[in-house]
Image (cartoon, rainbow over all chains, first blue to last red; front, side):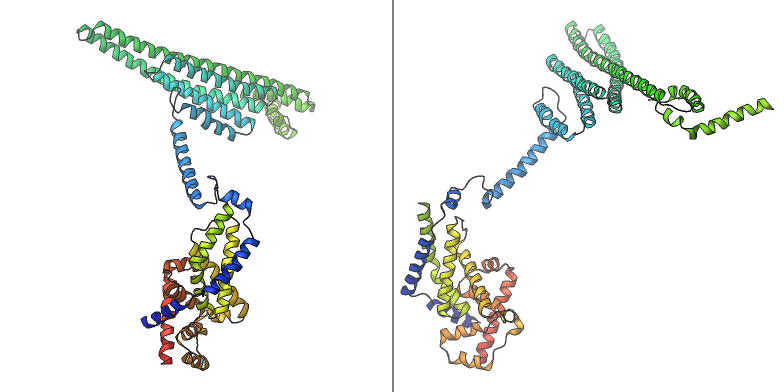
Length: 323
Length: 169
């Protein structure tokens, strides 16, 4: 076996182009090279390779590493920014990137309104978090409250827009969602308020006892009470503003419901229906006005199909009298 | 200036690899004149590629790949009807006349004649490994096959040559 390989290698060693042959081929190749010169435009882009040229294999690797790294970093930062409050380093990321992206996803006016309700909730959550933080400056708290008020105004603007466009369903739905959200948070705040009050009573009694035992100085007691007072003040302020917003939202919701209910009734009245059915409608309205939210079920009650069974009921009622 | 750089690179590649590519072609087609044409054609194609401003990472591997493609084209031109049979192992059979030819030739011609009797896929693996001195890994990369497949081909090619040699003796 080795002999064969040796033989092949010996033969290969002697196999080469003679100097004349090599020169002849080279001459022909040089002629070809001169006849087919380098394309200027090709070299202009390739001999000074652009760092952004994706065709370069090394660039592909680097680029993909950058893209993957960027995505990882971006998603981590974005995720970390979600739980931030005003004053945090990543808070601008939450406001200007995360929320902008979410806002872009909401396309329809209803989706936009829903997103603004959610945004108002997020601002409210921030305000709630800050109210519990003892180290936060009043300026930051004020900024958070201003943000909450601004987002509340945005939701109200949406409702006003729906109203001006005669989009009763969306206007009422948005007002309802907004009021519901505020009600939920108010409930949470109330619970916390009660817990806080109970702990305050306990701590006050403890501090008073310790004061009487002369283990704490007057300054310590006053500093504790001032800190507690500040915290209580800010918490009360939040609770008050939420209550105010909730009150406004509910008021608006009621207004809208009444307004559109009246409009529906007017439309109903303008529709001509048989006299016998009209009497049924008038009877049905008294029920609907109490039970139905938007007073729309009159339309169905006013149909002759519904009128027939009710006429039967009337007959049944009159039967005992005849007997 | 950049054009000159490309020409210089091309000249350097010619001086460095002309003999190796020619040798490869000789052992693949068993015809010196045809091998000269094929080697020249390989360098022409190299220049066509370089003149477009495209970069070549491994000049040697690139030239072997061009030469190999040209050789396959050459086979197709001349033996279109028997190429499939030639690539098929079952087609390996040395006739009495061929054997007589091999016996009468000198060492160089005898080696070429023996290689001529090998199926092409064995021949190309054997030539690349023991004539051109390429590694099994490089050959596998050039042929788009696994290293294991290439090793088996080389081994079988040597076995067949050995068998032929024994028959001649």
